Image 1 (spheres, protein in one colour):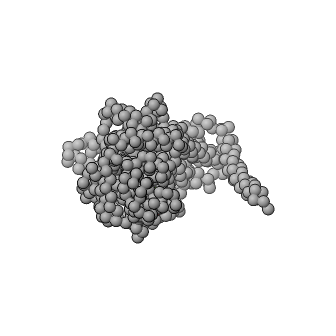
Image 2 (cartoon, helix red, strand yellow; image 1 turned 90 degrees about the vertical axis):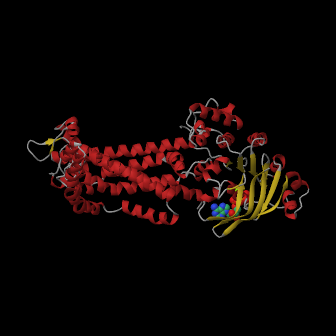
Image 3 (cartoon, chains in turn purple, cyan; image 1 turned 135 degrees about the horizontal axis):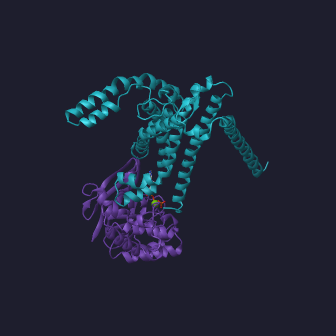
Length: 249
Length: 324
Ligand SMILES: Nc1ncnc2c1ncn2[C@@H]1O[C@H](COP(=O)(O)OP(=O)(O)OP(=O)(O)O)[C@@H](O)[C@H]1O
Ligand SMILES: [Mg+2]
């Protein structure tokens, strides 16, 4: 089932075009990896799905993106859209608030006031992010006192607390040590039964290990998009072949 | 010459310059206290600080500076009430809402205003604000509003306005506070804007990505993250208001009575020094008392500066996760 559909999607930073005619169907309850050399537009594409590019001065988009068959520009209210499409950033970016306040930030802004309900959401989200055991006794401490890996899992929990259906991760493990990375990868695999997950990664191994589908972007164009197995074993495009065998990038 | 030697030389030059200016500052403070000290052979510290009457040239004279201290607090407080919300709102507009082009024009403009010669502001207060108060604002408070209120049969409120909000002197605490706000608003706005600008973009992105609106993001993330910087800005703004001389000298009316109503004239500490130092005989009691006022003013502004420093370190702790 298609969760996200882009149709002839183009994006411009001022005069500079960063994405060219992207047509792509992203499937529900699958992990989709976006790979490609630096500057090819991976982050730009990912940030298009929850309209985070709107925040940048001079950004223009052409074409459309549909989530659950509704246009993100015409049919979705941007606040609703961002509740449905959660995002985890490259560098852990917890708020300088307590662990507790970080996790319930989203639910609270969406108007939930009931203490018990907020507590439930918090516990569930932290458990989902495999962080509960480590922080359950220090919930009132500042999130800034956690390690990098813990902070990133906190950001994942914070994203889950809003009950999104789609999770976008932009190189979410690139600043983490191997153990934290393994933990988060395991987590993502665990979560795919309930969520649609799109990850940007520089690590070919990571894409091969985790994802069901892989898309290769090159100079803002979608070069090839297929089942991960196919991309890594018998790519049909020459650029893809060179990229996945490490001959450039 | 090796680069490490060069570095050492530079370092020492800076050290000497810094130490030199610190020593000078220290000597000035010392001088202030030394010149004031002989006063206390004749006047007790309690009588000086809490005496209700400042009659330095009458006989018998009286050197109580409570009216002056209260006047200073009153004008600083009123101008803070005016300038804290406006200054912060302006900073938020500049840093979060204004289009880039507008910000590039407004920010330097604001900084220009805060550097405006205060004598010009004082002059403006004298010839524009003061007459406006007596000619326009006073009738409005004592006739227009009471008439309207008695029309609504609110005679108690009506009398309150008529009896308390008359303005017989245009040069008063409110005039001075308004003119001081011309200095404190830009100070608070400019420094708060710097603090808001330093809030990492990633916080805002995280908040928006969680479905918060721009306004919620400003309220719940940006302002709290910048709060220590904003507190620093406010403290420095208030301390500027407290030490500012020309404006209060020209627009506050100069009466050395304990101020009660916001439209009473008053004589803040710096105004007393500026107005009286010229006529106080060298090493007279009056002269020493004025140095005492200087010392009090020095301590007050020092307190505000220390508070602003505490706010800053508090904020740094928060960023490092040492406090919530
Ligand atoms: N805010 C911006 N303003 C102007 N150009 C931008 C902006 N952000 C990105 N670009 C440009 O758009 C292109 C795509 O950038 P993007 O960040 O999407 O690449 P990426 O594939 O995520 O790269 P990386 O792997 O290094 O993160 C690049 O050429 C970049 O210079
Ligand atoms: Mg990127």
